[in-house]
Image (cartoon, rainbow over all chains, first blue to last red):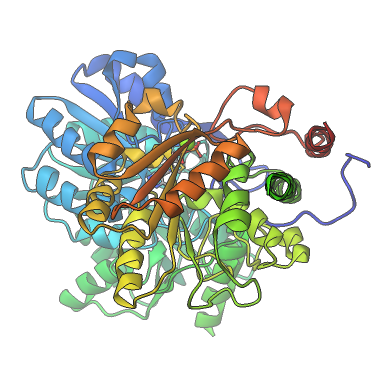
Length: 333
Length: 281
Ligand SMILES: Cc1ncc(C[n+]2csc(CCOP(=O)(O)OP(=O)(O)O)c2C)c(N)n1
Ligand SMILES: [Mg+2]
């Protein structure tokens, strides 16, 4: 029997680890791991802790560089959070990693009670945020931002790309208090270095201006929004992109300023369900301030999402670049 | 009598072979999959589905069936292989493994697949459901057993130990748990990630009728399942199965151990051939 490639079309996979990088896109390897190693050289109080997912959150880079500062807690997410709290009480700054679902759903009460209530210096970095795996609901963290936003005292960050991650790591270490960070791992797209952009904790940044549409986005949806803007420019639609990597606390003044410029359709785009994420956060602030532009949400449905190949699912749920472009065009009439 | 026993054993060996073969064929479809795990647990699944459990292939929800709860959802490839061999899933569906809109997603989910009794994947949950199933069956006066398979990595999760204590508390003699000790989890060897020995003593101390076996010794697996079902004590039953990842395909078994064993594109056929050679030997 032949073992060479047959003419059968390649099936699309529901594998757990799927790359979010587009074909031919520039990427940076393990930006979180390398940024943490760099920072740890100056900050001896930083330790790394994981729940059997060092290799899958790029924390293995830190573990190799600082084996004596790395704590493998086993696949026990509640223990991970409680022990990180204990470490922080004793003066360490733990960077803890797991998948977003297991931090936010399995260990929520432990983060709430042992970390957040005591305002401890624990930095929680979670891979597979939102819909970034085809593995089905057990691994798809479609509601992680809603859960973490609801926790008092918790800072919440949704970085877009490798640059965001590299600059976010030292910034969160300076911040005093707990932080939840969405993490992209492996070969992470590099996008924002093409723009005049720098990550600043708590700040929204206008990456691109435009007259017709304002997309307010976070995480990988900013990358998508920038692609959509290029695509729609060909149709003479001028799209502005406001990147909001810090979801909590929200940079309300920048958002109000941009959304308040008249005549633009405001679209909030997020890799998260329509419930409790950036869209609802922005919508609420706009209403409170009496700013009422035409407002739309691009987000995941309030549903248990399918298993399948990531590109299939991003199309199905409307967060791929092509579907997003079509949707925005349809709203413009 | 002795004759029929060797016949039965030969049949189980053939089922185990075909489960391994189905798993390799699925791995080939996707060019990936948890094949090391599927090969290590094939003997346990063969004995579960062809030597122990009561079920009707044409009616996977038959009320009197024994329940099998796959806690470690990433082992779905192994259970699909067994469900195909058992006639619960048509052989033809093997081709769809892990593809868009398939009934066989890479992580096991009850809503997708006939015969899949729970959605695993968020590890450490199966035993808690098994406790409830055991209690629920007793409430109904059912004679059915609840089987649940979980992995050595899952031993790290607190919920496992909650389930262990609870099953003994409720004297769940209708509950048979199997833990696959392949000494592997995501970041490395389980014994180094979180020391879990002495496991037999721990399980016994928690009130379980406990057997520890070589999970790739078919005779030992058969004997352990018989003993678990027939044990007279009013207590839950634990089978600790020490297994070898890649078992049945020598070159995979010899490969550097990993949560994802690397299999190159051309090696799936070689693996099928190696498996076949072992069957004839
Ligand atoms: C609650 C939870 N935490 C973490 C994970 C990520 N994860 C998937 S498999 C795995 C290793 C589990 O150990 P085991 O099943 O023994 O691994 P294997 O034998 O398959 O290598 C981990 C940590 C998960 N699926 N669920
Ligand atoms: Mg294991």
